[in-house]
Length: 319
Length: 319
Image (cartoon, rainbow over all chains, first blue to last red; front, side):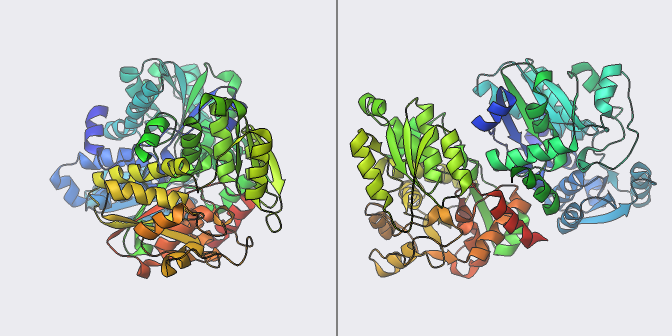
């Protein structure tokens, strides 16, 4: 399915490069290879899964349109992929999502429906709207076509690391519901078995790390209240968790301050813009070096839709 | 020479991608294709020319080391390329260069010698040190091997635009002494004759634009005093100007405010970090649209070594 998704994505997705800096290597104590998915269309890897799912719809489904619920990056990915396919999209977003993500989703052609993250269930709202309007629901992670699309990051990584002569390394992946991490893990299983995916999360929202440690799905206590808004999902998915559990090495978690500091280093050394939830993988490489194995580490920097205020906060670590 | 430089650079330089955003297209009124050389090693295209020149030295020359004068980006490019070749470098930098560039040049292995941009000539200082210590001087732009290295940007653009089906377009290039612009113009002449290079400069420091308009080398009145520090050269080079004069379409110039605003849009829409001097090309595409021809415009965003304070200033345009 990942290879089929790569075929459908060809010519529509950006193959993101590998970026490096001797300054980052020095902090991490090993080679750091960063795959900047912030440079993907709509500023995050989510465009891959959205395109994968929408491009696989039947003509009848496309005519009726799609719906998605998302804290913002999946929203933009689905809205843009839908617009590119010439179809309509409804996006259910939390009212406390960064204003930038809400505005962008609208500007990209999505019809935005807001909900209260603390008291309402986006799943229920999304599924109700989907059935009322006969829309196809594109789930953010617990959907095989979406996982397959995100897995194309892993196919690219397998080629890129082979070109660089890297056969064995940890691959750090920012992890919310586990769509990106499980997709990458599946792609690496087939194409680069020496690379192992490791989910990275914010401290206090490390449901995947705890689920992997116990072998059973664990939930977070809170639904919001962390700067890494893009990856605050309540628990790993029913489809993603068994994949993560079978293929991933232990999870890593970092503080909000570590995420902001990693954003500052990405600005200074790689010239890329990361959002906090897209920087927890780089933060893990830089500040959890003793939990990582090998001479090189691969970092999937998953998104860059940072509000200017939050980015300014990160830059304060440099002055 | 450009093709030979591309051979020497293979495996050492990054092929930078092409980035786009529907939001930028809307402002510019045409498709905007951005080649982000800020993602190059050391944060600017200058690494290409530096590597091209150093990789062509004889063993005896390498043993004695190299020297360069630079406002900062050529400095970092030469220091890093020299270190990668295992040779020493002396870098003559203006005392008012951004502190970040001075620090980085030292950290990359360069021996930094500071001078007063208003009262001293970097050319004289550079040539005196070169002869005292038998160092090979690597000029920032008026040097065929350096121009050939920068020209590899044009070779990549020729391939990338052909893949995108673009045969005719203006190519906007941030221009100081003209090394990058002349190198790109030469590469396009041979490989994509429908693309024409156009130098972009800060208002008040538009020596190249005026030189092209009059057909003779013109100088700037001031040597400093503009936020676009990377491209404040006194006049086009003796080698670069005849190339620019033969191949380039008219120059474009933008205000400091336009450069900062373009940096903000690059942050928001492309998730890349540009410095003011690396953003004048994007600023020209966005704010000088009526001086540009065609359905698409290509923007070479040449560098991203922005001080955090300056970047913060650019972000203020978003809030």
